[in-house]
Length: 408
Image (tube, rainbow, N blue to C red; front, side, top):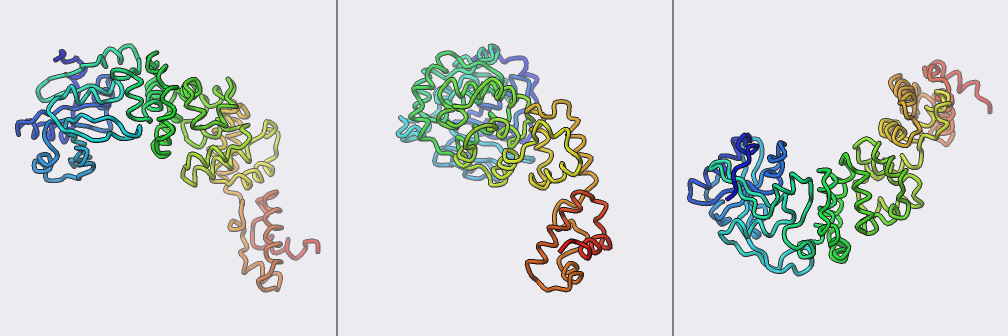
């Protein structure tokens, strides 16, 4: 048992989380906060998720608490609902050999906390804290690795990566998000684990990649992906195009997924291939596609307001803020002056689509004296073209006059 770090002695544990620990302990069981929550407490942070490890069997946990969800009861996990959130309670367990690099062949429950911590990925996650009894366990040197700002596997790195093919990407993600270094042995083991990584479900890969892309140290993270060979497995198009300029661009980009992706993919021959492979939400793909298809060019600062309004139409006016962020990241609008101009244009709410016209389809047909026909569409496009140049013309009277006097 290690001495209790001072930062943990001052840690404020939510009442609902503490109540789960106290009830397990009162029933004669072991109960420890484990994993990322303890890591975050040691760093002076405020955990979002709380995980408890116990020697109580899942069915015993279910009997102790009134509001539970059997989240992964076959693997020993029960979700206990508490005021303001939930706590994941998992029975101490040991796992047999992993059969496919994704899941263990079997799970055995037992009463040994250290054995439970030994199955975890990195030392900084193999930590346990009992705030009720004031106890702390760190059998693999996670506290020292936190102090040294290092991501290191528990035990032999090659073995940990062989157990779960996602762990190489998680190692890079933790190093990026926490702004830590990769332990040399841990980094050296990643290339050999790539065949196991290839078996990991796309959804699990994407979740880790998105967290990496939104981190402050994203440029360094992408470089780590390239250095370890992971980038070629995830975004081979980017691996071929990666350079110092691209890394600088993405590091300047706002921490918005669409902006970061677009900053990375500018200049890539087939960006749609990368977007399709990641199977991102359709809205994200559409936004990134629009940003890449209609970027603000270097000469945009010399454009007239009418030209900027036409650009907004091509881009989709709802995307102007992410386009502005991309322009700042790529150096097209380094001081934000162009973005301020565009913001002013958008704030004026000019007509940018047919639905913004002061005449709807019925009014256009009445003015032209025609029924539904291609002529209505032609007239609508004509009017929109005119009001993009001069928004002040967008009144019913002036639009009718434009229709009456337009060239045949």
